Image (cartoon, rainbow, N blue to C red; front, side, top):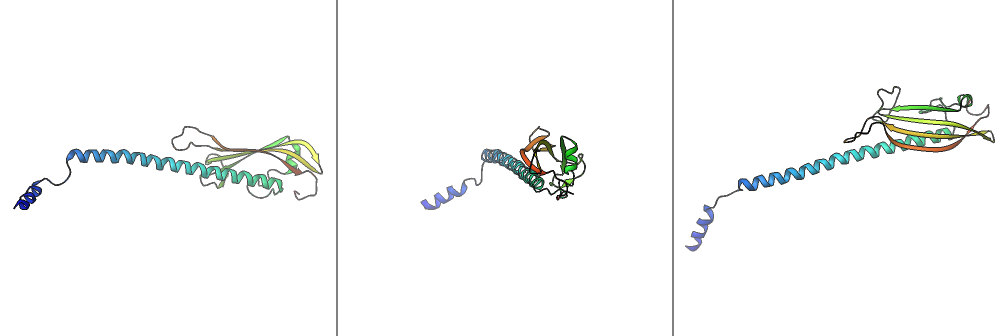
Length: 172
């Protein structure tokens, strides 16, 4: 009998959560959800920045190695840095344009990234090779997520290269 009375009292209680408990739990989950979404947004931004930096370093090193090996007819140099043009002027400035997928394009209007390299003749010749200063700068035209900086410099490298200045070598 005592047990049946206890069971009856227990069965008479209301089941479920109160309105206050539901409001507090929904508010707590929404605040936690906002922080999680912000974390994912920043994570995507950091991923994009590191991808851009990797590609900047890759293409810059590729250009430096192509110039050192005097491979002038491959992308991205495309015969634009021949010694004939270097001997006529003090330096060469060339811009290469990339779209958002890091593919080389022709026009600056559609470009997301601009790689500028400057090759300056230092007039020091040793063993048929001239010493040149090479500076490569990669910039991003549009800002990143939650950033207001336009034309942000992603990567800059400066080095010196010896390039053959004699006629009849592999540059002809």
